[in-house]
Length: 227
Ligand SMILES: *[C@@H]1O[C@H](CO)[C@@H](O)[C@H](O)[C@H]1NC(C)=O
Image (cartoon, rainbow, N blue to C red; front, top):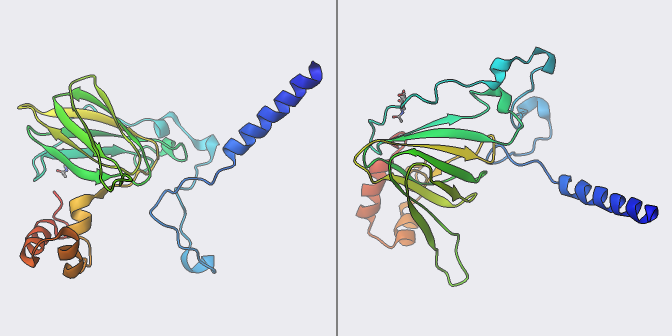
């Protein structure tokens, strides 16, 4: 009996060892290898403060209760709290944000390449949704919902999603990310506003429209014009 217990324990330990033997997650889009680190060393994340010098302030962020200015084209404002402004989060694999919405304000379709997002509505009424990756039948499915205060909704890692305030009053949500650096790729900006632009031949064929439609869209999203 004791032997069996010991065997079980050994097996459990092996299983947990396997579970932890994964590569660390990315903290950036890519990490091109260099032969000579002197020429171009770049740290994936941040350096760690000597733990003896850490203070409670390293783990404290203030002011997330303050409404942000939503006077921009989309009528929304994302206040990200991550290791850049809350240093104690470094290496812990999480981050959060407050998002303010003007009446009918939109957080336009975007993805977080490195994080799942959990959203809690604090104020307002929002129409939110995400789209699946390509299904075997070639289609993409929309999962959407209308949310009220207290409602929680999940945007799985990497999937395109959006949040739209359908109310006549401002809306506020709190979101959490499963990465200290989730990254954000806003679809319209990424497709119609990168530097340098994507060839118009690629875009006309991809979207099956005339050149002038693409040029019109590009004019809306030329670099730095995202809000
Ligand atoms: C978000 O709000 C802050 C503070 O209210 C403001 O400084 C910033 O410019 C706003 N950002 C956008 C994109 O409107």
